[in-house]
Amino acid sequence: MIAVSDKARPGRPARVDSAGVATPERLLDAAVAACVERGFEGVTMSDIARRAGVSTAAIYNHYPGRAQLLVAAGQRALGRITTPEHGEANPGAIVGAFLSPAFADTRRLLVELHLAGLRHPDVARRLAEWHHEQARVWLRVAAGPHPEAVVKTFFALLMGLCQIDSLVGVPAPDGAVTEAAVAAANHLFDREVQP
Image 1 (cartoon, one colour):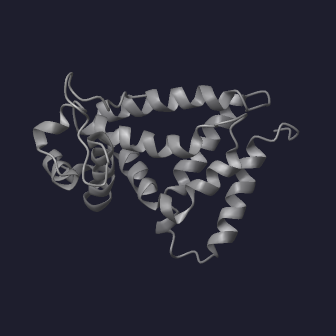
Image 2: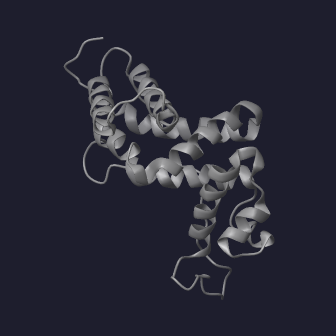
Image 3: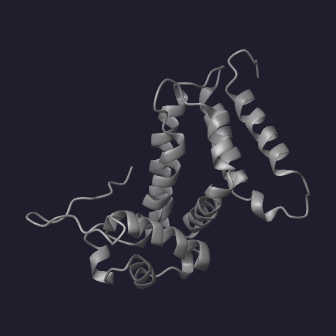
């Protein structure tokens, strides 16, 4: 995972805004908003800085570049729903959280990042490292003769669900879509199901 520095320079307190939000968090939030609005190719560091209320130069105290910042924003958002706090990871719960309306901007960010990975080797490398790290977590709960295939299919399901908001030509109740996706995710990890 890309390290996100939330430490201020020695001798200085962490900078926070009037709501008490530290600069690194504001940068991640601003990066998501800018990427959703402008797409990966259209995002500039100055736009992110303006949204976060900092100078463009200040971003570089926390992130070496745009790719690192945007990937870190995706990692933070997914980490909030995919890191099991107690016990095993729950694929159905992850899918349910992934499809929540509050996660819509993150779904769009993830689409942008994966498309950018096709054109930008640095983004592709960072995504591959992230996928590899997360695969190790999920391999602990996958079963069957090819658990790596289960994990890769689960990741593909999540990536496909990033496009759910653009499938307006296929009407279906949101709750029913979530129910079907949760069932599919749970089925993938069902240790009783033979491939």
